[in-house]
Image 1 (cartoon, helix red, strand yellow):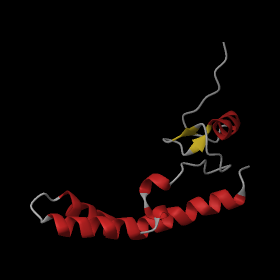
Image 2: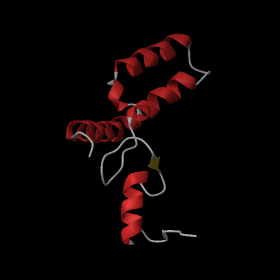
Image 3: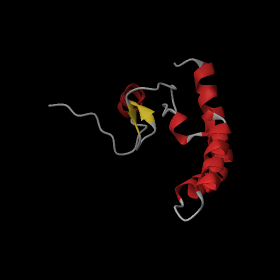
Length: 101
């Protein structure tokens, strides 16, 4: 099981990203608009830099929904390889069958 603090920190980041997304998108649109004057685009760049860093989508870490493990994460199932194996062996993941030969 992952540290509870790390899992909670990631949840706070997800909330902040959802909250800041429209504002960040608007500022990025202004920055990338070549028709606007350079000064206005530069001001938008400064405003974007002033926003909290944890509001950026790239700061979110994919974590297992079951254990909170940050590595060996399967996006399709939203869980780590270890949790997938345990739940798959118990038959709790649809479509996953233990193979043997």
